[in-house]
Image 1: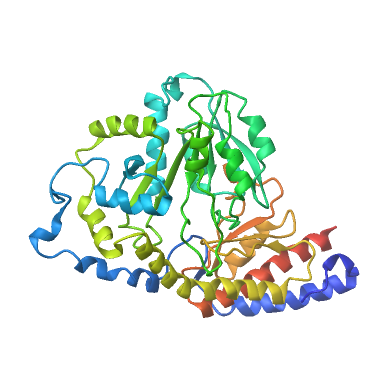
Image 2: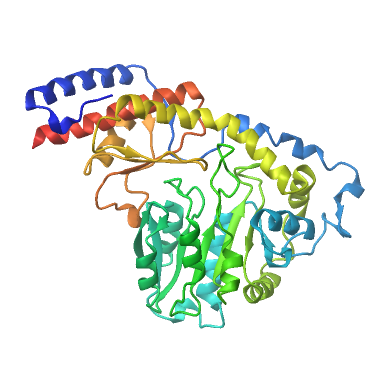
Length: 425
């Protein structure tokens, strides 16, 4: 455990800098090529679903609910796939629409539909002038990129211990130009925060000025628990229905980190009116999705319990990697007052805060020594975090030994960046 640098004399700071610089140069000499920049499953995780390719063989295997999945039809998805996802999300199958492999693609398409055709009986967003979107920070860079590509004005909403700052959200939605908010409600990207029941209730009770305001509930990690006592998330659909807001929420999830990122199945769930509207638009967009892949997933996982059993296997693989990062932080930087980090019970990320003004330098130092991190600032819209302090860590892909090495190098890099800043003062 390090003594807090703020208590050190200039001479001691210089000595500490020399020590950490030596450790850093030793790492550089190893010629490492480590990458913890994105939430990519490890090969061992992909192997867990390999048997999926053997569940369909005879021609009769491809028939499901009277439909030959090899042919056209069912633009909104197989009934059995709808039932599988409905069980996990706690909604009715009639409110589920199945897509391709990517939930991000479904979110993008929903934004495009609203831009071109409108939603909730309102004019297309493209015809309404300036559109604003609420972005919880720190958050998911790919969400923010969609807003930026569409020319939306992004409004940052701070993440608090139990979820977004709801006082601020409730104030901001009084503006009719605010059309939505990105939420990752369970094991958020990157903090690993799960929204409290109070937060979910307040979301469900929102009374936005815009009738076409929607909560984009990206429930990517809804069953991605690392421990048996994982977090519990309240069912926003049930709560919104009770509040008279049945079409307020569009929820998304996928099996990208359950089966295969490149060949999973994504879905979205929404209120009756929105579901009927989207199905009409889909009828023009496609004659039918990849129903064979949907059927593979249904036959392989069978039900929600099967999906959760798969995630327990994933947890056995990635839990030690999270713990290796946290162990390194506890050992290396727990005494530094300006450093803090999250200890998520699930999901794919750890959020790290370093000395303000040093996140970009920390990432640069790590990169020069062979460790690739998510670019500093990425967890804010426009890749511009004012405090230059937050770094997202994705520990899932490398082996435990490499993760331990990466975490040590990251600690050294953040120390060097902080010491450089202090010595310049």
